[in-house]
Length: 57
Image 1 (tube, one colour):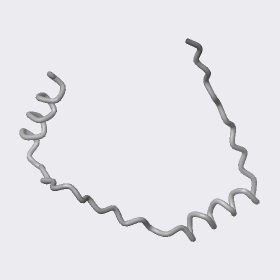
Image 2 (cartoon, rainbow, N blue to C red):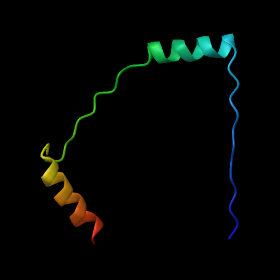
Image 3 (cartoon, rainbow, N blue to C red):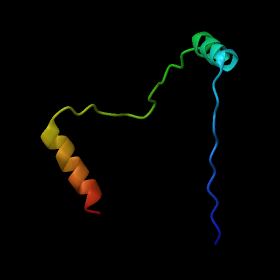
Image 4 (cartoon, rainbow, N blue to C red):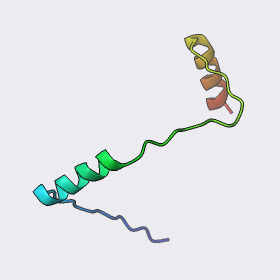
């Protein structure tokens, strides 16, 4: 099985930089909505417990 690696060099000049800034400024913000039920966990012990259960599978 052969693998290929790709490398791309981007060169910025004043023209391309101004076009990039314009694209960023005029892009619309996307609202991310989580449709599945979820629970926010802030307790570090609970997070450690979940991660340990996940990593020990």
